[in-house]
Length: 72
Image (cartoon, rainbow, N blue to C red; front, side, top):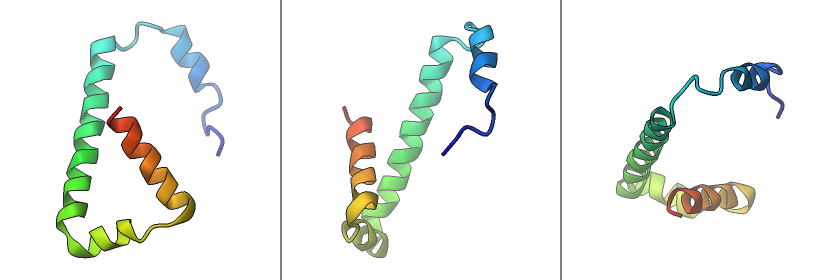
């Protein structure tokens, strides 16, 4: 899947201090909090839990990769 904004990387490189490191870390923390909220819903909802456990193939591998990335 390609980037729909081909010059966006150049634009951000032009302003390396546009966002502080602490702001980016805060955004990452929000992503982790959101992911944890979704996982909480999944493991407490029997139907959703069964759907996740039944995953096979690339969908299951993608989920495992995501979980390992978050908890590493």
